[in-house]
Image 1 (cartoon, rainbow, N blue to C red):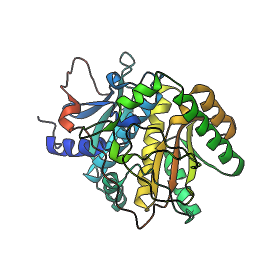
Image 2 (image 1 turned 45 degrees about the vertical axis):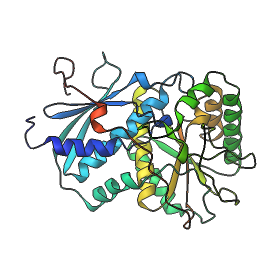
Image 3 (image 1 turned 135 degrees about the vertical axis):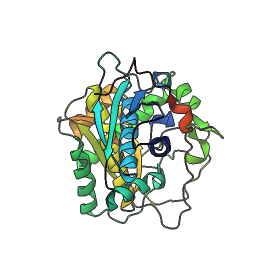
Length: 331
């Protein structure tokens, strides 16, 4: 396919990194189309989670993370991405049109791209080593560039957040729609999507931060120390689809920046999936300013622990759609 200086190999190499983005229950709710001079991102509504994510906020957030991963990958490959978000009002699932121009990669571009394959969702207890304030300031700054705020939950606001997270787990445990949906997307063995059993551990009642109750957990957290993770809440000033998409991009920036400096992270969205509890986080952590979009555990993983297994992803060919110029035009 002729698209000037850009070849299929480069585009697919970038997409292979983009699909490493985190997504709710590892549903990977994205579709991609490659045009003559552009790449297009669509949300895949067939991968929606009606009970877990009734307003599809998590799905848009996931796609935003993939969009940022794509931008990072292209930058390392020598292309700068010019992004047009929500380019087609008649097609709300068309989330972004990406045009590409030549770019000289910087050392930072290459480091951040390398962080994509190193990043893991780390559900282990983090150690008591303090996270340097400069690192927390760095991830906050990177999120702000993309239009999001990051607030560290400390003291009373942390207590409120932990209480809200426990309340979410209790409500979901009694939700007859939520439980089968979670079971359908977790406890997986040998599939390219969903949450593998080997990547999850059973919740322990004594834990301060309860893990989501995934099906068939096989991994055992050997640590009997408290979890010293810091808790960050990422929010946006508005709560429309564009804001949620940008929040996903900012989330990706936070996770990759943290990985690049050696920190472990774990994305947590459960307390934000119930409207009343999400409002509680808005008031209790964001001081009634902004809309919480994600909670992030961040800290230092145990140095003696084994490396976490890679969570599988679908092949690029499985998330590509044919490009139809009568449907899509770049902005």
